[in-house]
Image 1 (tube, one colour):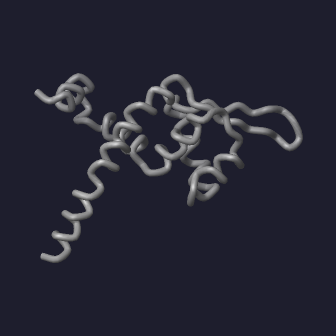
Image 2 (tube, rainbow, N blue to C red):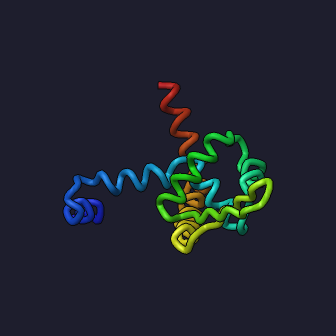
Length: 123
């Protein structure tokens, strides 16, 4: 029995929970935000500047989901204007190693994947 089948059997939900978590973690913005926050606590405006191509709306939605899932802590300081900072939780930090492993795999296999795509397109 695969680990996926084992988890699905234990949860009894046909894998819905696992798929939902993987969908959140594997979207392009989550990994970029988590990698950026690995540098340390950042304000919203700093994240907008450091995550290339992300809109303020998408950053807001992704940060809310990460906070909901316990990967990011949001701290609001009562001052004018309000200051909000984001930081990885211990669970969020535990995502760094597997994310780097996945990125390393992708980098290592780029030539093979690009060659396969080109061969597929020329068929």
